[in-house]
Image (tube, rainbow, N blue to C red; front, side):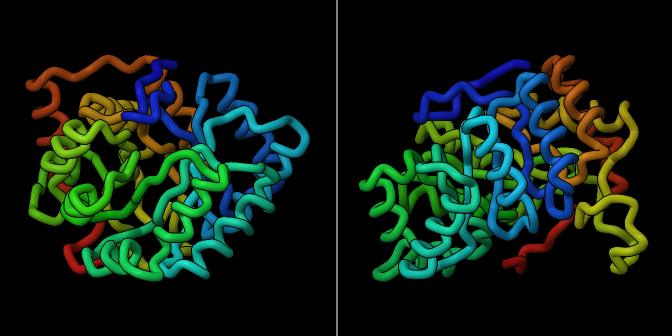
Length: 288
């Protein structure tokens, strides 16, 4: 598995990252298999959140038996200092680790939220205190609005940024989903870049979750050839790693495509974008 430098952290991350959301409802047996398969395929980075159902508990159980063998990125959705501190400590306990390699503010999709996190009494105060105590090394931000994350990087020197980057969004660029300015800013500031939703196709036609073929909140591309086109497009951009989709059944095809990855030239990128133009972006400009 190819690795790339995670910005100023210096960590050489695998080009695909273990996405904890896929363990939302997983049994311990299935979670163990997923973690061991990831290691066997050269994946060395985990992304997880306390909002991901059973994920922290399942990963923590595996860590307790096997040790922390991945670069570990965790998150908090809390915006204020006290709540963020409590969230961070709970995640450390659940994951059975003494520190995080990366700790991220989760789902930040408005500049007002960014300012609340960074302001007096905001969650950043707790995270910096935790960093000073050796409970984490690096600080990141995630969300579905590249324009918001771009502005956030000008307000604080985040070590990493995570946001949607896929060929469907590339086919419909608007201010709220245009990832190119954020890639430029991240490159200038030497921030590591994670792409999410690389194999996303469109929103499910029916809101009823019981009718969805996968536990992802979006309909994914699920044919090997389409997954390859989608992942290769994302990995051909100036990013560090693409987070695996939120359903374990898709992982074998994504891992296979990642191991065979070859950068797409401009012509090939335009072709895969044009074939995705029939689908619409996942979220709108008012998402928070």
